[in-house]
Image (cartoon, rainbow, N blue to C red; front, top):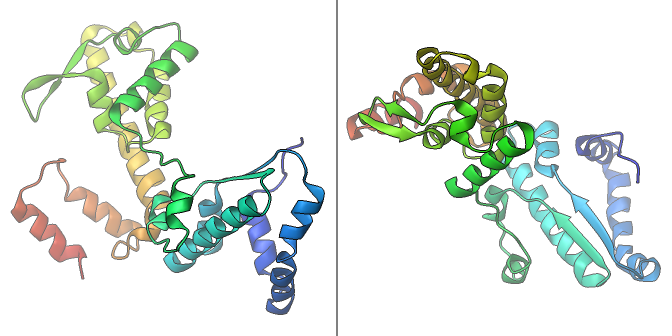
Length: 260
């Protein structure tokens, strides 16, 4: 099977640009899909749809209503196709924020067919160690970094290496593996002990901050940040967050600046 030459956003834009009249005809013709699938599909067939939310973000930037409703429509379509032909399996990825807005009599039935992806610290650590074993000559995190533990300045205690890495990622496999890749490129084992600790902190801090800002706030979460509608506002907010533990007075000050 050859790869598609265009991303999902290309086909989404194509359908939305053909005109309302033609689009309405297309929607009416789609009602015949059930009969067509039963007529032609007689053996196991899988349909996989991913990155639909990204296509919506590209085509409708900052439009949260369209972003949610289109994914809800995809849920309905996938469920209908599955029910219309037991040979047909449809797999779609839906963001949790869209699923929370999904209200339907079929919600419980669909939920029973769904897998909710939650990446806890234990799972991310297993993934990180697996990446070390697969892509480097080392077998564990301590051997990979050349560091057994690192001092946590806020708590005044020694912290496990992965705990430090986990605190600086955004909680996704991609962010964890990106930090691992940056650490691998640094050849920490070639540095003396003092330089190794310093370089480790610099890499993890810089990589984590870059992910939080560019990949998470500017890209993935931008559509949900109603009062942070510019990069300058996002930078201002980050400057007001010196740590992940804040006093009530600090939170109130931040709230007054952005919750309007």
